Amino acid sequence: MKESLTHEGSLPLNLDRRKSTGEGDADADSEKKAQSASEIRNVEDDKASESFAFDKTRRTLKNRHIQLIGIGGTVGTALFVQIGSSLTKGGPASLFIAFSIWCTVILAVNNCLAEMVTWMPISSPFVRYADRFVDPALGFCAGVNFFVFEAALIPFEIVAFNLILQFWTDKIPTAAVICIVLACYCFLNIFAVRFYGESEFWLALGKAILAVGVIAFTFVTMVGGNPLHDVYGFRNWNPAKVEGAPFAEYIKTGTLGQFMGFLACLIQASFTIAGPDYVSMAAGEARDPRRNMPQAFNSVFYRLSAFFMLGSLCVGIVVPYNDPDLLNAISNAHPGAGASPYVIAMQHLHIPVLPHIVNALVLSAVFSAGNSYVFCASRTLFGLALEGKAPRFLTRCTGSGVPIYCVGFTLAISLISLLQLSNNAAVVIQWFVNLVTASQLMNYAIISYTYIRFHKALKAQGISRDSLPHKSFWQPFCGYYAFIATFTMAFVGGYTVFLPGRWDVPSFLFSYTMIAIVPLLFIYWKVRYGTEASLIHSLF
Image 1 (spheres, helix red, strand yellow):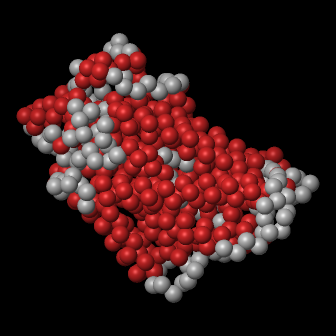
Image 2 (cartoon, helix red, strand yellow):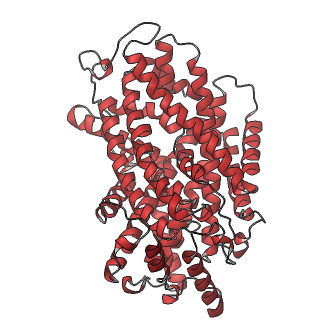
Image 3 (cartoon, one colour):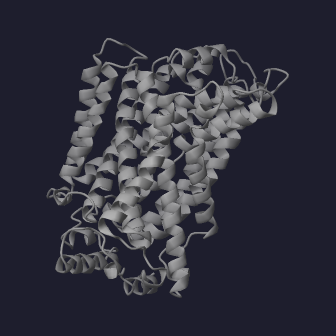
């Protein structure tokens, strides 16, 4: 490790290679370059990020916090409730295969991030990597895209929180619920980051318990451990028992309809499965990042396997894809966990208490997800400000290292959740889902391409990857695989609007708006500031 740190520490980034912004002078640029290099050399020090003027966050997040932060931003209603919609479109086999395939894509993204973040654990890492390894214009559009992605998810989770409460009662005013949730997010994020880390640790632990619990519920009940003593096993996969199983038809009939059902499941998977980007956002505030960050990234593989792959398998086991109660719950937007396949299965098996327990844990999962999005959105905005791509005042931190103005701006955007007061909540949620799905995929494509450039630069300059603090496997194959898959899926996500008789302007706009905006942001920054692409022979 000492040799790796010495080698890498002797290769500070050449930040002089181009004009990154249109403001500031040469002295400021030199100061920033020297301070940035200082951060890279001293990341083993818990107070590394306190040692230079620009990034004043503090390294107070412990290993146990970082391990569960990835769960906090990943596991939510999509895995426990909305996944039922995909089951009805594709059937159990398509759902399981689609989720398994997309897990490999996210694992590839994870490998890309793990290597770069461990080498240079800074605030808002992959946004700033795009700036330094590719082009400042790409860093700008990557940061804006990810900020919009995270900021849009906050009202999505707040609306979902209110819907879940309605599983028990609809007498609580919606405005009160929204204000209370926002106040809680404010409290947990404006004080020291350790408060966020501690709250997220316990909330994410509840998510893990729920995920493991529904998997255990599936196994126990399928072998007869239920009040009806019904050993149903894989009955819902059997075409002799469930017509059309295990590959359901969607929109069209026959093989084409089955493929479109699979595609619907794959689109859902691309929104549901995430993780490495949330882990990476903690890099600038993690203790001993060279040791803790690789462990956190390695744990992503186990979460993908246990929670998403097994979760998608279990959903197709406990309830048939064409179950009337499930279809009715989805079409009528039943509140809370009422539309969850697990809750419907519990009701079929005459299990009275578990649905309320599941709803309570889903409620905490939704709150935790929103909390993570506030953290990630504020740190992304902070990273943009550090690179001179957002107003300088946003770099100001409190004495405890919290970028207070970034948190405040993020929470102000979250007030969009008040739209629920005048629009159907289910429609509002779907708008957010459609918008942020494309943003997430574009973000992963940018991360993958950034790693490809990083890998090429190492090779061009004769730097062995064995000298890095962490070396990911199957590279650069993972980088190319993730880039092609995520870039392609970004365009596939809203394909149904182009089918005969299915044109819908709102769906088209929300599916493809960010895909159009991201390159426009790139062009705007490049033209306005005349940025130059990084040269792979002079990156380090």
